Length: 601
Image 1 (spheres, rainbow, N blue to C red):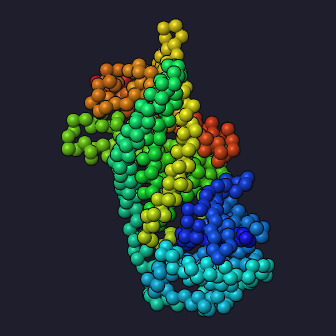
Image 2 (image 1 turned 90 degrees about the horizontal axis):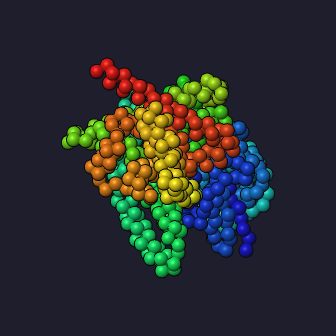
Image 3 (image 1 turned 90 degrees about the vertical axis):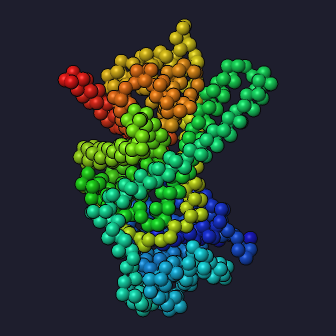
């Protein structure tokens, strides 16, 4: 049985992934090109006795660019590894797409052209004579609407009857072809998109809409995650009971049972039950905005601010990804072509709070700043949380400016920012992509960090030297430094031991305060308030904790990702130090200011 290799090429936002998913179903996986940080998807399908291996090349506008994505696509096409190049173009933007078609056909004539989004073109009054287009190009042309799988059978038929073999390059003139094959029956085929863009990219409404959408996503994530988190916690509790019974019946040593269950198992399952539901909600919502076509508008709105800071406009997108998970935000920095600007985006991504930090921020707000405010508490809590989000964005811009003016000095590069047509998102495809490409990817790295960290945390809490436990010794040692910046040694210890995941910082604090020897959960906000105030917390303490929660070193998963993306311990260390120093400095200012106000009043 002969295998054929297909390279799937096209501009970004032409429905290439939809064609790929339609052909391969679930027989696909993602990875990196050998020796590169550029991601690719590959899959396999069978038709008429032929097995097809399909490689989804990075979306590209040209094969002559120096960007990593476009260089990778160009190198693969020139390598002759593919038996055929399947070029996907957008029927609503064919004039621009034909430029890539020209570049590919100048290399090889082994190509098939899929004119996708024909349904959208028809709605916009755009008619394409695909028969004439096929005659002029000299390659098969398939009209498609990949979302509804129209044209898919025609594509499979052409693939199975294609005369595979070397085909000479073809020289074409895109402008002449476009004028010959396209008829526009509408005075304004992109009228709806333009009218909506006047609102969402305007100076008056662009930023408010952007922040409201982000806040809505955060709210849906936080509220929606409570139920699956509780279900997962109950499930893991059920499994824990049976594991303990098994270990006891097998005469496992008590110390070993405690280390494995109270340390490794508790930490691991806590990370999974707390991290998985928010990510499983946030990333699909975020990807729905991407599928709808809104994310490029966010980049457009923030481009000027980042450009003034010497950074890249696309950093706006990677920053927004960081709200879901900083590790994913760091990985997303691959879309930035300039190595200098990519580094700036990587180093500053942790200045915005990921979903793992929102629970603590919200808890501190509810316990110390809006308790007893009754009906206005939700609104006031939202305003305070929004203020912290804006502070994170301001610090991202400020540190980006600092880096671009010092050790990463240089001029911001120009780039083409495409505002794709607005489209109805594909819910099922979005869920699959976000779960497999983002959620499970991040969770896998978090588990790898959390497992050994659980044993370390248990060891510190349960091993004693004389009458003093190691954890108590550590908190006492860090107490003077903590007092200097408005907190205490327990809080500093909790942030340090919370390196595996931000979600376990507060449980570690309670473990230390209550001397339980294992991660401890609070049953209500009232109980938490009583424990913390008994241990000397004040609103100033809570404010400093919130600042440290917002600005501290990246979690272990993000650190691993930074090391992988930069290939450098130096840059990973700098990404670790920058937010930590910022948080410590701001906390010190808060502590001094509070003491000064107390002295004056």
